[in-house]
Image 1 (cartoon, rainbow, N blue to C red):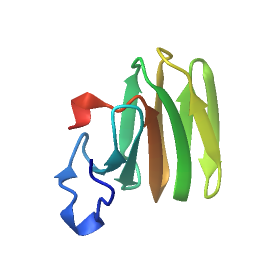
Image 2: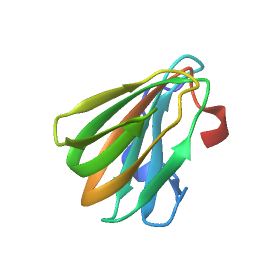
Image 3: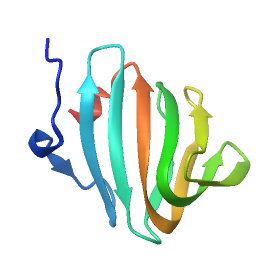
Image 4: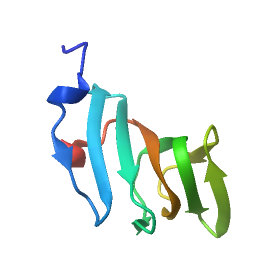
Length: 108
């Protein structure tokens, strides 16, 4: 089992235009990802069977979970329950930390 996931060793993924994702520490039950967004970048509406927490490190995001839209900024968090449609639009360049349970095998 790996214990340390150093940023310099994390492969860079580009899931959408204007978004850079790095997959951090993870095991079968838990995963953390850092997503860096350019202003205007869109995390399209989608859903998955994982529980998800989002933490705003910097910037601002128009975040949608189900039918509710909220602007979230530095220090704010969001909980996304499994199988609910969600997505965001970056309104100020920023970074999100997404935590998933279980891990997102599709990101590996």
